[in-house]
Length: 103
Image (cartoon, rainbow, N blue to C red; front, top):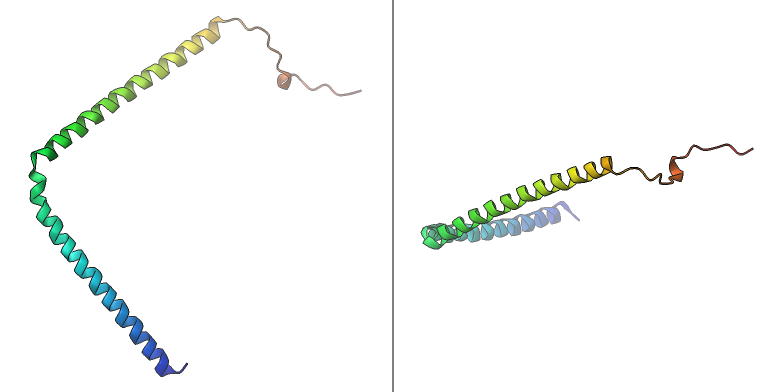
């Protein structure tokens, strides 16, 4: 390829890139205008009701998480207490026995 061919190729690529960028800019500006027009619709009372419902649900989830943490602590304390109170039965644990050399 000659230098002239490279220049032509770069011109075509540049032209197509600029057309694509212009189309994207046009679409994004139209979408921004549409979204700004919807901002007035956000004053709808349903949006406030939805916000209150989400806040109430978040409070309920927090309460459930606190209850779960309490139950986890309670069960862990009970298990620790049972482990202290229950006598050991002398369970055979071969992995804890010392290794004796073969003679």
